[in-house]
Length: 433
Image 1: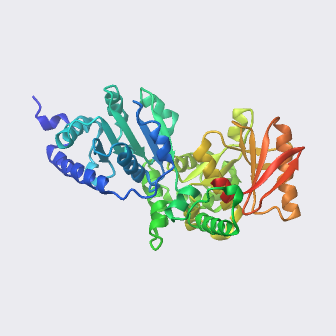
Image 2: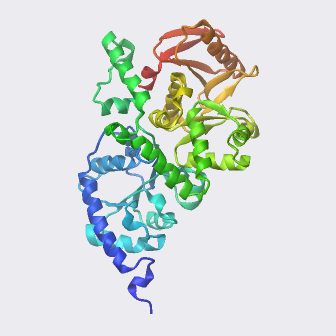
Image 3: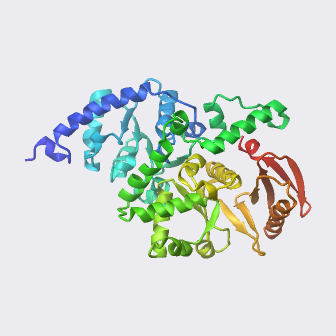
């Protein structure tokens, strides 16, 4: 007959370390600074009384743990929940086989709670088996992870019941204003000169620094570069067993230095000497899964045409891009476009495309769900720029019946008429709010 400790993959001595970890983690979690209230908390609130697991994924250090603390403080103020952070090194040897013993320890320490809050769950292979079993017993789960696979269709095959996937991005502009304690105007249609000036100043700082909470909190430290290296080494190279780190870094550097630009996998293979298109495709897939970049498809009625067309690349955070990339190749317009893309992601992740007209003119974004085209530019003051941006928009609106257009600029407000349709021109900082 096996000894009690042999039933699990971990020896009893390791569980003693985990016991201490659980006590310390719960205390630290309760005492954690709640930070700037995240917009996603409002969405999570709708799901609190549902029986389904809530799965929150996003970039490392984007504030997932803080969001959990805000959630716990608001909806479970008496501390009637279990909290486990699997990033703790004392869980390094932990496996899915140990969850039953972990549950026993949690009950022993904190009583029989019905709510689990699990942080960075992707570190434990097979974690979904425990969730599947416990969810049937009416236990509620809030789970975070730094791997975009937590939101993929693959997860649907692992979790047998319904689950609620959410994405947490770095600070949106209104969250950034709250972080900086800058008062948001109540009426954006009646902004005073002072209010406009303050918003412009705040927005200029926002696109320059980005919205990663820890980076903003400690500007004197090189946290953006450290985070970037950590993601490449741990979330990409180690997770996907990549040995050619130099090529991976070269590709990532190139993509960050050509943000909001069209890329060809075949040209990238030749330019960076990466061996094959499959290697390029695989690396980009891994970078997306780790939340560093996003590859956007061209809109086409044929899925095959969408897949073979060039992709448009965006980054997770403008501050991170600026820190890592070759700055001379950047311009403000690309950063503004990236900010618009991230805001669209917060609202409509799976239905964002770029558009090419029959005359091969490009519109930055097309949202088929509401048939909206969006162009992003610094200014329309220059006649050539206005002609280029509006010509593409007019062609696109003519090709897609009953569609509408929007032009976002750095600071201009006006209204244009294209194909006898009214097209608003709005400053990005107002549109973000």
